[in-house]
Image (cartoon, rainbow, N blue to C red; front, side):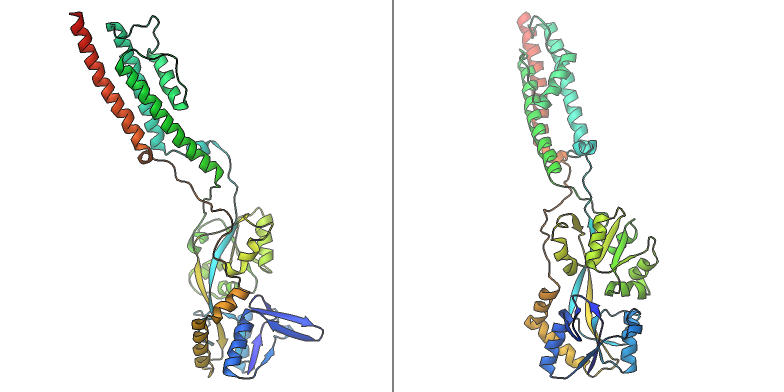
Length: 402
C-alpha cells in the first residue's frame, strides 16, 4: 500500500530529517501504526514532489488518489460537498473543537464603573424614596413646631436641613440632634437602617466589579464573528484554510468573501504572537486542543481569551474512491474508539484542554430593586407608621390643649 503524506502538518504529521533519512511521527502516524499492527499490511510512505509542495494540498491529494499513485492520504481530511464525490472518507478519527482566540481587552476606568453596580431603576428608587422621606421629615417637623410637638430652641429639622441629614444617612453620616416626636424618630431610624443596607450593597457590588475583570464578548459564534469588525486568523495550508478556500456555501464561503479578508500565518505560535502585538482586532480560528497549551504558557497566560461556544469539526483519513480498505478501517477505528486508543492518541498529540487556568472572567450583573426589596419595604413601612403616629400625636396634643 502506498501512503501519501504531506511534508508538515503538526501535530498530525511531523517529519524528522536526520541526515539522509527521514522519519514520521504524530497523532495520525500513531493511529496509522495501530491500523497497520491490527490489519497487518505493508506500506510505503512518499511525500509530494518539490513541484507540488506549495500547491493546493487537497487538489494534490485527490490527484494522487485518482492517478493510483497513492491509496491513502495521511493528512487530516474533512468531508465537504466539494470533495465528497472525489474520494472515500473513513470513520472520524477525532472531532476537533473549533474556538476563537482573541486578546483580552483591559477594563477602562470611567464613571460607568461606579454607576453600573446598581440598575437605573434602583438608582431612581433610592433617590426618590430618600427625597420623599426628606420632604416628609421637613414638613412634619415644621408642622410639629407650630403646634408645639417639637420644642427645641433652634429649628433643627426644617426642610433644608432635612435633605442634608436624610441624604447623609446613605453615607453613614449621623447627627447629634434628634426629633422629639416619636414619628420623627421613626423616620430618622428607618433612614439610618435603609442607608446602611444600601451602602453595604453598593460597596459589595462595586468592589466585586472592580476586582473581577469584566469581559464583554464581542461574539459567540462564527455567524456573529462574520458580522463583527474582527479579522480572522487561520494557519496557512491547514484544514480550516482548505475549508475556507474550497467552501461552496455557508460560513466558510462567507469567510472567504468577507472584508477584512482572512489573515494567513505559518503556524499557531505565529498566530498567537500576532494576537499579542497587533493593534488590529484579530481572532484566531483553530482547534482548542492545538492552541490551548500555548495559551497557558508565559507570557501568553491570561492575556488571551478563549471565546465561549464552539463548533465541531470531524477529522478523517482520505482513501481512493471505492477503496477496498474502507470497511476494514471503519471497523477498526470504531474498535479503537471503544477501547480508548483514539483518546490516548488524542491526549498525546492534541493536548486535550478542558479548563481555562486563568481566573474566571464574568460580566457582573447590576443590583436590581428585587435584590434589596426588604430595606425598601422596611423604610416604607416606617414612613407609613410614622405618618399614622404623627396624626395620633397631633390629635392627642389638640385634646390636651382643650
